[in-house]
Image (cartoon, rainbow, N blue to C red; front, side, top):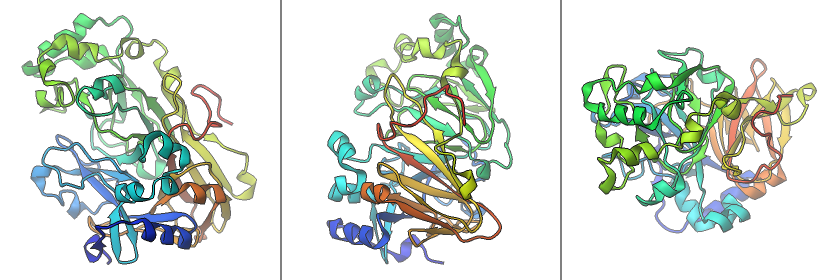
Length: 418
């Protein structure tokens, strides 16, 4: 078994190595799995991580219930390892972070427009897999996050069937607040933080989760994700604020309410209430404005493959990210062309991508290298990537996510699936 410890870490400039690898693979960089733990949560055990490795970082750093994809964003975990959240590129017997590769290679990797606008890869995606619900919380918007030197965080959800054969403890998500909820009611919930359950879920509404569907979550909207495993394209930030004091009997410390709030406002309940986007949280047509169904990009099912939009839509007119799901039937090959760079994870089947292996063990050890994750550069995406399903018995299914404003042909929320 080849592990990440078998690789030499490159500390110098990576430009020559990256360009040589892109030339060899037709625009692809192979990525090692990036595992991330979270506090106060219980792993849902659907990430394919070996059960013996759920606490590979030791119990005091909590259980692993996330895998991040093509990430140049650090995880905001207390006491974390220095590179936690950062994806590693694997070239031969060497490794280096995708962040370093992007810094050294710029537009060659992420594309001209994204590099011009951000000078980095500004998004990432992940699987979030928890046994039960997580506390009702929000992600700050750009203006709020800037006050603590961070960036705001919109995010999207898709619930891949391959990782949701069971729903675990609570496959329902609370979103927003009931229309008519007042700021004073919300303030009372914060006042009651240390009295056990602060009652905030009484003000919210739960929606049943369905594998294959998804939703778009703007900043400042309260949500308590349920226990389906989620594929989450999102902005490259890890800001949040918890608003539920007790979840499944576990107390949420006040530090997680104000983690990304200026110190001067750590006890300012009015400031915390006003972080909420009130119109968005109390929207009486919340589901209509956020719910996503998979939609075919083109009618190609007769050819033995189909590409579908799984995350799409705009937040206040901005397309922050999009995601697609490619499914090819046993023995079928297809050439897929996209406009811009993307991160890819294979979720089912066995095959090849531009001749490179596309597979994963049934159970992945914490330090094991897989062949299921790649980053595709802009030129490679535009020239086309060849997907080959080498299985004779099951489909090959891959998810890929994209950066901001690159898929202008993506559907809008509320359009009818084909």
